[in-house]
Image (cartoon, one colour):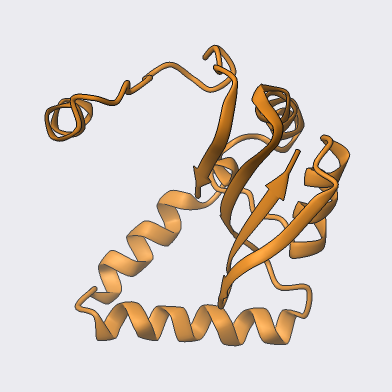
Length: 143
């Protein structure tokens, strides 16, 4: 996959090391697209702090994560509708169940409030929601 990306975008550098080991350059913008949910919760704060420290003053961090709804009834409704959405877009029940089972114990989601608190605890004081679709949420955070 990296080879395909590199061939399409030769002017970009693709780093394949873990985020914990990667050296982050001073940046105006960093984007995290549904990856923190696969990092153990105790490591997330360290990673977010590293991201915060690598941003230049006024730099932005855009984060997208799948979240848990705080109301179990709403959570069940949203998950059910998302499953229906997948079925309507050609995924078989077996594919949907297989993916769900493969993510159990690997993907650890937080609530909206928990994610905002984690972001603020790592230094981001201006945290705003920029996208929300069901259980998917996007944030913009400024240093």
